[in-house]
Length: 407
Image 1 (tube, rainbow, N blue to C red):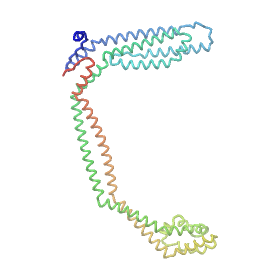
Image 2 (cartoon, one colour):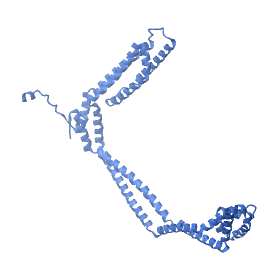
Image 3 (cartoon, rainbow, N blue to C red):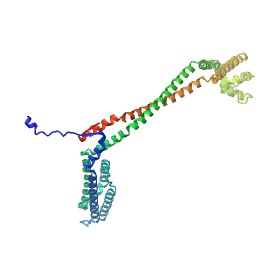
Image 4 (spheres, helix red, strand yellow):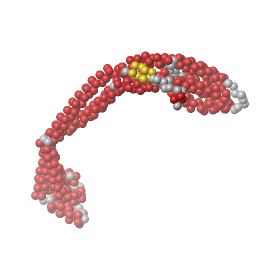
């Protein structure tokens, strides 16, 4: 076995390159691959092909049909497609760009492939029409355009085979490393500033929370909710106190509507029909008593049904002077109590203060969130700017060149 091992191909030992000499090695590597020469040869070759395409386009434009005995309409269609095909190919040739450095080869090649695909779609119909009449000339144009695409693909493949696309990554990382110490210092300053701002915001948050707790536990805050609760209770009291009056005037509604026509109490009746409770509270002279007295006399003439007439008279009899005075007094007392409670509620600023503090707290918390994100971003930049990490990334890339980087 040892004898046969002698004939085995030995692995090529990696080239040792010291980090301080990396720029020299990159220049030497690029020079050894004759990039400038390859780009120059590529440009010359494509320009030759462009001229060849232009030449066959002229032949296509000047070519005569072998069979002139075709309908005029068909000839017109063929000429239109020939004109369109020539225009599209000419425009494609004028748009060709040449790479000035190896880093431009891949993107320019990709764009060229996209343009050729688009050209193929746009000229497909015209090409098939021309094949029927001028196949030789049309096919010659298509072949020359294909040659340009193949030349571009070959150049891109050569660049990739030589790992030249990776030299850009190495160069970029080297620039990052050269700037890393200064950048790292700047990033760390920004980091400290962000941390300080974040601490101040968190301290502010704690103070706002303390103030909110203090306000919520204050006697003024409790008084606010006590007053609000009492208002709810007075509203319920008002509802209960109003119920009988509403029911009485609801019973009288039909009779009042008939009676008011031509009466001298039309305005007063409208008020009681619209809102009997408010009308009674506003009726300080109790004019309603006189109106009810006259209504009672008029009931037999209003042509109400027996049961309705009976209920109407009963409702009028129930609303005596004493009854109405007591109801009016009770309703006005409840209303006065409610107004007093609302006045106290409006003069109590504790809830407004809590709402204001809560608004500030929300705004402060948003600022904390923003500041945390900014801090994360700067920490991520610090991590990526780590000189040791950049060196390791360069070392890993150079393995594809069979180069061992030493520090």
